Image (cartoon, rainbow, N blue to C red):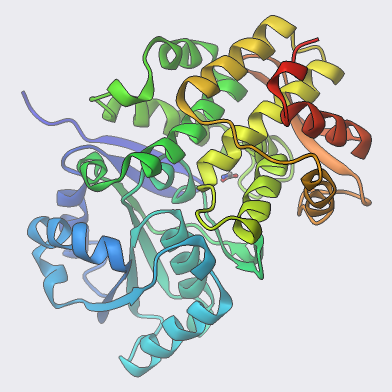
Length: 366
Ligand code: GLY
């Protein structure tokens, strides 16, 4: 059977998904990108070892590309790392006629997209995501940026890639915890916009999924439908932030306090539990659906244990959320599974209550 290549468009960027996605990149390097003077590949220490050989085997032109390798981990998504990238680009003669190929997870596609977009006032880049998280979310839709100290994505800009090449074969190189991290965003896409997708995910625990390609296409389609209506997040794109205000607070707290911090997706999964609770308390998510969401998340993720003393710090972190308006938290909440509403004001007291109940799941139910 011929291998199918799925083609979508998000915020003006073509997205290719399938077993022949890297062949498409190979073709485009000889066609749309044939005028590029220098090719750069940005990778981290893991993807250069595990994914670059697969990339070069399928895209031989990249064997002579200039490689920039950074340390992995969200803690390195910083302006300091950008400075190193800009320095290497400059020393190797990079300019606006060069192309940067970001090979990695969301940390690399966020960082590389930002570094390229401001280098010489804008060098073009493409994303080759290697994690599930990046394949269905981070590499798509043009959000680029870095963290400021431990606060997530405080510096950045909307700058869509010239293309995204999603090769699901890279997932075999991914540790289980990283796969799970992406799965949280897949659950989020289903929860905010597609109850039939949620019912599909509910049927199988993540650990036994073997065919990722169709699930990836479905999840990317949900994101595309939302982003294409609102590429610069003035309205409906905020739906994609479900779980993220409280999730980013867990993530920042964990980066500050834990030796082995939560992954982004683990933090978002915990954030979705809290924001499902707030949805139930404010906009009518039924307690049956709230419990179904909590149960499904806990089927795949461990409950992140926080002491009640941590609540003040977590609440304080939410005060810095980029999405706040006039000092008030703005959340995306669920009216039901597959039905979300963005731009919902939320009082700090309710965040505190959700966190208090989160410390002990027994308290989540009425
Ligand atoms: N990751 C959320 C968005 O792209 O808007």
